[in-house]
Length: 119
Image 1 (cartoon, rainbow, N blue to C red):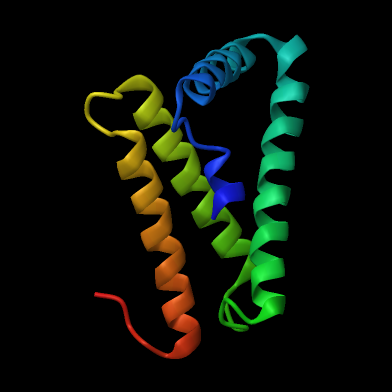
Image 2 (image 1 turned 135 degrees about the vertical axis):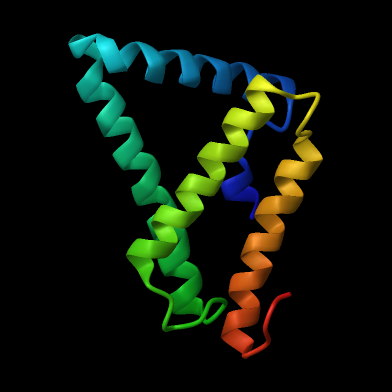
């Protein structure tokens, strides 16, 4: 959980980093000299999330039948979306809401392991 929260803009330093990340990703859409670095950074982030999910699965924290590719995509999209919303609209989505949303998602995955169903 703590490692995944490092991606979220939950304090001033990480919010500033998120703004730089957003600006860089936006520039990379139209500047080919930045495109490869952007793609590589996105791939590295996804790989890190995949390693975290895979490790949790191996330790038995998450269900063994969770599709690693789909869960990596889903968790990466959640983190990206929370980052965008918190960085661009901190008055609408606070750091605590971002952390709580990520925690709820992870708890839901853990409940799937135990056979319980989240509402």
